[in-house]
Length: 633
Image (cartoon, rainbow, N blue to C red; front, side, top):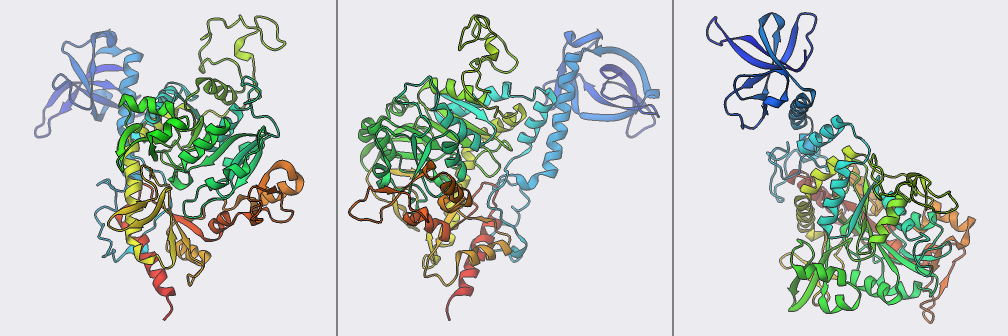
């Protein structure tokens, strides 16, 4: 029987004798009487790969010596070799032993099956015995592929997923609660809520600001406006529409990829504008000092879509930080205990540095495979400084319920049947009282188990993204005549020896890049489409900047036809009225030259931490070869 402790005859390797040894039965016998056992040992009890058996682990019987199960000592024996049974383990003692063995086998499997998903610098990655210098790319580079993104993991994540699945809690539970706390601590925010995607995170973040529990003048109501930008990913904008608000579009800076801050005031309408919502494009922080000052001045909410930017930091002078409402970050920085939120001297000025996703009121993350961390599918809403927003966001995430008990738990408030809300009778079960029209967008606990292991690797992942971006930039530096390369916000240029050239004293952006973006110059002897096609033919993954100018996407074109007042666009065509706002009847994209440049000229390739030098070399050589082939004789 599984769980029995038996003694059986094990043959010596070098003679026709047997030794009687104890073992633990871990499988049922087959038709021949063969079954699997794990050997027991009374020596080296604390050796790795062994599980100690205590006296109280036995349901019956026992052993005369302290012993441990050797998880590496699995073998098949026949029932005829069993000499005696001396005990049986309790189920609660047997379960962790079997689970440990399964997890050990899982790690062994992952090492074989998923070696290509290891970090690019990992010595066990199959490419790393083929790496070469950038000036001497490998002769077999044509057979190499270089995805724009991908899952990066080791046996740690696979074991975590299997271990959690064996527990079979499934719904968000112990690992989910732990990951929420770990991510909140990593960022330095008040609270983090896990959801099932970055898009759901954006949906919940906007929905939280529509609650009737906010003051009337702060609450986002149907018809109220939220400022956003024209180029980007559609689900940064979709939640604004889905919650009945009106997105007001400003243009993008084509080299930074982010919103043009000089257009914020033109988009603002007193009494109508309630919030600003931008993404940090491709891991490049938008100008947080400018946005925070604007929001502070007009008392607006700021939602940071941080889905592509986990690990980026923004630096600004302390003097300005104090004036634009960043006391919550200064308070943390002055304690000197947080690894990202800190005070430092830059250009002779005392400055505040903090990660993106911590400057506004709410921020969001995505854990889809291409992103900085992955749970397969998944995302998060970060509550940055006002805890009540976490209560509202959690309600919208969890069906709209008023109760905050975790799944599987009751009466956290100690008055489950003591509430009277709405027109319900007094004492109605609080678990089934709903304060909002909500959703159910929670992830699974095995996903959170994976995410927790990913958080442990986040510093290395961030560094790899920076290193890979720099490697590509150095390798392509001679192609500035045909490409305009992306720059971090607040940078005006890049130098091979000095690095980035910064615009203003005391301001810096340190990018945790999502991708390596470049724009094909209009005077280049090839088109963006031809370039992308060539990369595709040579197995180099590439993407446009998501939806490009969203106002030209069919969904938004149709929306303008069906509901002209559903969105608002800016028109700067009249130099005498720079703040004029209109709805151009035919093409609302006409007033957005930056977004159009991004749509027509921008492309990005990968920098994710799974890339090896072999792949990076292939990318550099392929792009160089393409440009060379197009050069005029």
